[in-house]
Image (cartoon, rainbow, N blue to C red; front, side, top):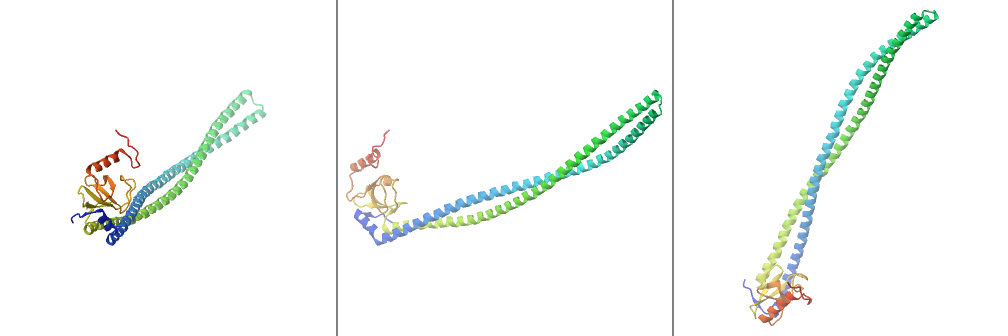
Amino acid sequence: MILKQKRLNEVRALIASADFQAWWAQLTAARTALKESEGRYEELLGQTTLTEFRAELTQKNAIDTLYRAGEHEDVAANMLFEASELENKSFKFVADFEEQRIRASDNWYRLGAAEKRLEEARDKKRTPAELATLERGVRQVADEYSSEDGRKARLWDEVERLWARCAEVSLGVAEQRALGKKVRRNAEELFGVAEERKQRTKDLKAETEAAALAVEGARARRSGLLEDAREKFGCSVGTDFLYFRHRDDPRFAWCVALLEDREGYNLEVKPLSVYQVDRTRGVAFLEPARALPLSQEEGDLRFEEYFLKGRKGEVRAQG
């Protein structure tokens, strides 16, 4: 399509025409649809990324929790083994205690008999030598009894210590087993949550892919409408402007804004407003449309003043 030459009044008449206004309404609707579809796509993409991350994190947490359950079960097994060893050891000490109790009892009976013989000898007024011999025998048996009785007491203390430790360990076994079951249930729940989040991620990915297709369709719709403008109105098409050749001065072109932008250009751009641009500088320097073109010197001067002064007339810093 050849780019048509137009005067300013022709461009404005074209913009006011029913065909152009219908096209503009369609383009506005297409742009709105594209913006909404892009927003929907970005929202779904964010949800997908977050849900996928949470699913992976929950899966890892479930695995770590399952390991902890195994640790509790291992501790319970080790404690059960220790309890069994303590119980077996206590049986041996009980047997040793019974043997020692018998030996201590024998010495107790011997001590009683020796003390009785000494008492009878004293009653019969035996010689000092005989009494001294009997007294030495009593002291000897008493020492032996004291030694055997002390060993018996130590054996019993050890038996009680083993029984106490065995009871403590057995209670610990029960607690560790209960903890293992509790933590394992927690791990199973976490695995369930991870699976739910994986399924949700899968669903979101499908929705995101559909949203991406919707964005592509909306972009294609917008691009098709811009191409329609090229064919219908004989203009060059950009993303945000339509361009028409200047009938009276080939150095310039008319551009019709397709957006509103208060900051991006040297002028505040409004939709469907017509601006004049130098064919070399393009929209880098917009000027209000005027029927009579500026001379080359006037155009260069206005361009230089733009870079020396702000949009409100403030002089820009140089150097």
